[in-house]
Structures are given as structure tokens and as C-alpha cells.
Length: 115
Length: 116
Image (cartoon, each protein chain N blue to C red):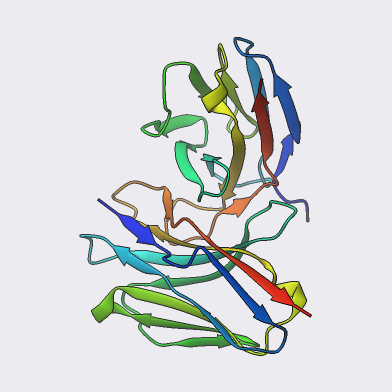
């Protein structure tokens, strides 16, 4: 079956521009996560949705970062007024249930480069 | 706070050698889950294994095996008879129980290169 998909795969933005990154989770997956992966580092948690509810946004680095999942399926991560330090790969993951024991299924990521 | 440490940044071996990737974790919880993921050059994280804190039995899956030792807070991963296709970055991760945060906490990863 189809896995998690993300678009675009690559995005180049000039500093100060706004960007929107899309995630299509596996159909029926209740939980959705966003992670940020800097070059040579492990992924770091940004935010978590259970259906349409954003239950944890403790990892969002600033108020320039905003995520939504209005209908409990597709999610969008928006970054306003991008800065060079926002350059990273943004990974989306979905999980079939609510239990943290389940594995998360990851998409291929969106590589954001801010120039 | 939770923490995962993968002290080996890079490992390079010749094909058919055995290789062990180390993972040490910190958590105050008595119930937790440990994971290993593989990240090939394509970038997508691929799930390899999950272990809960109450199950210390070692696991073997083909050429892969995992050694979980609660006493030393370690969850090491061994590849036997390595192959070039095993070349990737490998991440160890820790998750809290459902009452806590839902996120995965990842180590920094170990880049494994298998040379022909």
C-alpha cells in the first residue's frame, strides 16, 4: 500500500519568504508527527497530532512555525519569514494507533534550503 | 529527560565482517520502548525493530540481531556478515509510554559504510 508522502521533496526559499510543506499520511493513521533533521543529526520532534487535534507542539522552535491537520488526514507545516537556520530536512511520520509502542512510518522528507 | 547516545559517528568495514552499533539511553520511566531505524541515502527512515522495557530477550532476524540490557541501559544492534546494501545511517530511538509525550527521541545516528 501507499506509504507516507511529502511534497515538495526539495524547496529553496529566500530568507524572509514563507513556505508550506505538505504531508499525506498513510490512510487511516490516527497519529501524525513532524520532525526536523539538521545535517548529520538525528531527527528532532516538532509537533504531534491525534486526528485533527494538535496535542503537542513543544518542539516548534519559534512562533514562525505553525502546523495544522484540519480534517485529520493531510497535514501542513508552515514556516513564516524563513531564516537560514531553518534549513533542514522536515520529516513527517504517521502511526496507526494512539499507543507510543507502535512504530512510526516516515515519509521521504522535504529538504528546505534557505538562501 | 530522555536521552539517546550513539557514540559511534561513523563505522567503515569490509563486506562480510560483523559490525555492532552501540546505543545507550537515559529515561526515568519504568515503561518505555526502544526502536532502531535505518536511513538509506534516499532519506526515508525505515523501521527495523521495537522493544519494550519489560522484554529483555535478545532478538534475531536474519543477519540482524539486537541485544537489550536494561542493567546498562543499552540496546545494541549487530549485523552479521555485512553487505554493501547495509550501508546507511542507523538511528536508535526511545519513546515514552502513552501517558507521557508521544514523540520519539533519536540518537545522533551512526553512519555505516560497507566496502566491497
